[in-house]
Length: 140
Image (cartoon, rainbow, N blue to C red; front, side, top):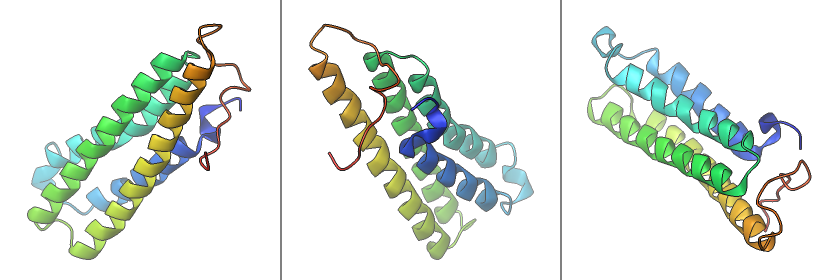
């Protein structure tokens, strides 16, 4: 694997971001610089952190950035709940978003688990990722 764009975790984050971006276009104008801005920042942060962690070539740093991305993922879910409560989205859109959230969370957790196992297996001989090390399989 040579680029973060090949990571399933990043692809899922991208899919979630695109969905949310289309969703917030229909929010009321008075939310443009409030909830919409917060939504945009948190949903973009998910993929941004996955990409930045990938570029660090170090197990622990990659794990930490993925954890930050996971935090942003949960923040985005909270924004979705707010949008539902304020009636900016209906239950069907919320449930659709929640499915994408769950998919992204599952894949991201799988990637974090892979990185933790790879770090442990390196047993101090090296603590960085090579192109070969970055490949992961969610079935593990």
